[in-house]
Length: 106
Ligand code: SF4
Image (cartoon, rainbow, N blue to C red):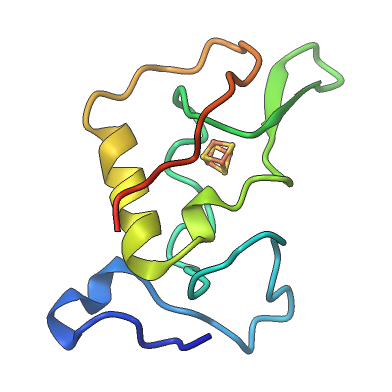
């Protein structure tokens, strides 16, 4: 797995921080690990998951994204995935994750 999947002019799309003490923080990543979206920009919005809904001590529904590798799976692929879902963002209303086929453009 290389840290330099992208040509220099597209390097802004991702990077791999292999010396991070939490690396790799998610399993199931098959492409170069993208650390750019360590805080997922889709957290407040509807997304394809997979997330688990938990309820905090104040009764607020929150996403547990532990099982989601989508923002990390490839420098280009993760970038494309995030851009696609931010084109028309809709605030997440606490609903459960819906099944998704996992397709992202390369
Ligand atoms: S489930 Fe995945 S895509 Fe959705 S907010 Fe969490 S990390 Fe982002």
